[in-house]
Length: 471
Image (cartoon, rainbow, N blue to C red; front, side, top):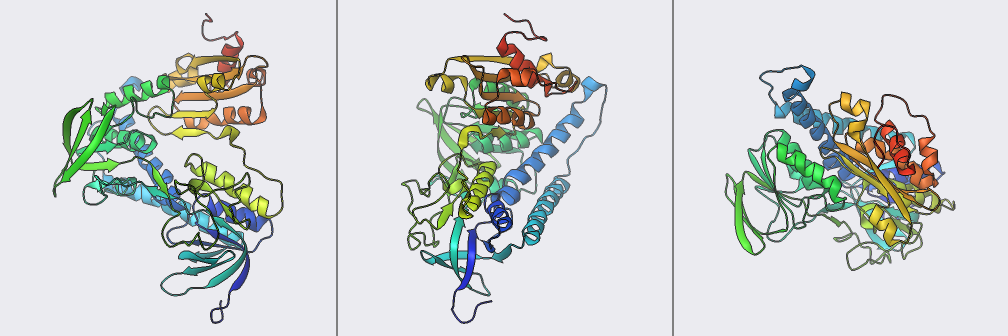
């Protein structure tokens, strides 16, 4: 490939093959660029291998186990329901393998060259890729950085032994009898509830006054209620201080309102956020790429860094660390490189957490809309008023729509309930396109479906709901 130490000329170098990087590489190739993508681990990045996909596979398995145990309402009784967690992990690994192989096929089909290894920048338009066997040097016209993030490690709780990050938690080969979770955000809530459904005694230690602090409290209240049903103990306004582990368990010391407490469990899972992968030997300083004090890459409205030939996307730039945000930014960066007028617009980034019940949100909350000066009209329609939700024996939850009272344009929406992760899509489209309440309510929704709740909520906010009494 490379003669001596001469540089190989390419159009676009993509660093990182996660949901941001591989999407950017494919889009760049579609636009006629010669693309090479480099990643030191597996195709698909954290999302496909150690995050979104494996966690949802295990969460789905936990739901199946719980459903088999509690189907009495349907007149179904299952006896001696058991979990073979080895097979559960095999299922999860099979899902991951299928998805990562699919990414490989997509890259190959779009003629994107894949190099398994790491990257170190030499100067502003050259970088060396290297692994144990080779170290080609590339001269690129453009580069897209998509190096992602890793779990934050706290000094009092160093990863190792019985102190786990989400990566190790997803690889456990047995169901722990007990688990302490530090951090009740997305990851802590999802994995804590998943293990609880499998029978683990879970304690969540959260510094704020509620789990899932990024969502409205009327949503998280339902999640906390369901957590309590499976025996999860939620300790809020708490400060985790230290941990001592043996070969059998780990004891966590924490305080609440100045009172010292402790809890002992098989494992400790630390989920307090993620750190951008912009440090180490990447050599961003040699490439002329500037970082913020938090280690994030400074970018403009197209993802362009302080080096106009290098773009950055995903977890290493400002904004929520979400896979779909990274994929979106990857497309924008690839199109900007191709000279298209694409720019990032974060008006409608949905947020989803796969707890039970699921929570999702898009656009502005009611309080955010008021803070921005909008005259607001809003309303909530309960899942209990929907035939499909009731027939699924899942009547808990609601959809809330926030609209501009002056023109009925939808500003945002929040959902808590079954399939909230899927239902948010229609409302995301509504926010993105500037749809009105009438656009939603006059759209005929199939019956009986959960999607009807979106229509009914719009009608409620307009003031003429059919399946609840308007007050």
